[in-house]
Image (cartoon, rainbow over all chains, first blue to last red; front, side, top):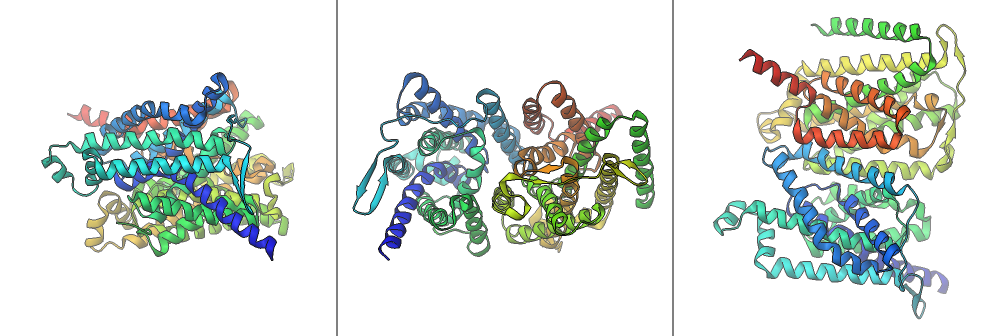
Length: 291
Length: 314
């Protein structure tokens, strides 16, 4: 009995750590899809891009991947702002965001993946850092630092974004853009500019999420596809547009996946997210903390 | 042109294509041609849902692979003729399409798109874990070398896919000119207004998803016989999803001609690029063309031609 209790508690802890990491992966989509209504299915492609940048810098200069990712955030912000500008001019302004806008992002996802394959091949890449390898032990609980550090960084990222959205003028304007664009205009804030900033921020988070991903597991270009289902499942489960909901959704999915891997084998884990997504859509489409 | 007439004309064209290919008398023509024909079916099927109703399906690979794996399953159970397997593949994928549609089409359009993306990952997970159909190792299908009246087996497969093309095109064109097609168009243009005017939108959307899924499954059913060795990564390849979106988008989504043009152009281009450059580069070309066309020419080649004709009239 003692052994299975150990297994159980470790599965829960592993799930929470994984969920922390999923928070970082999803929080950007929570902004772009949840608040701005932009279905950016290319989000995982930007994450993989972040992973490869962390990998290159780590291999050539030996710099810590998390440090790299924080430095890269402004660059990703500009990239995101640029992508939004194209999206706005080509689709949102013409009212064609549903069919063609989706295809646009799908094309971006695909092109990024193929370019990464052409440049780096399909070999798995990994980074080196002091926290990859050792574990802390608290009684029977294992805390691999490889998982603990990403979890803490992700929660810090969530805290910073939540503060930004609730305390600053631009942050509140971002929340307002989803509710009433006319009112926003009357406050002398251009909805397009606010959306551009918000989308830029959502892509900036992928720099960090990418670095965390390559810390947790070796990365190859098509790994991103597994995250599409996860990211949107978490986003919908937590409730669209709610960052705290995203954290809860991420933790729940992390725990369920960790149980699945522990008791049925890791090859089943990718199917869990889809089950969660379909069940949520069927029974509570508004999510746990939905607006 | 009446639907019956159209069917007759396209059947005549198909027969001409088949005997034209036989005149060249080179098996490679049939191998390459089969792939192009398969893409015509996939693109047309995608367009019945995507182009006519405006709902994006990113899971073409999943529907295609379901047809292919249904074949592998029944091949191991009891050998059946391929036309029967095509029917089975169509039923399996159609039912999954119906179920997916029922769960997600009552909500906003984006949810359906996301669910189809996730569907491919999940079905791939199931197949990888299912040893009976080969699991991650894949499954071999030994195909006979010859078949009685036609000759080489690849010509038989080519002929089957050609009939599927005729079926898919007749289906798409028939829908376009029927009440069903007008119903689909109202959904695409303004779903709320359609619902308010008494169009049974959910039922129509389910018809479109089922039909589109079934045609994709039918295109997938002969695939194991074509390729001989079916692996999850080849059946669920992202290139099916990308191509079946890119082809209608590049050709034009509003009529049955668009996917046909897109598939023939892009399909042949890829066959040439695979031989002369590399298969990764040709996928890059498809992706870039897709992004370029949706930004610059939202109505595809058909739209560009129509614009030019309209300008000439003025």
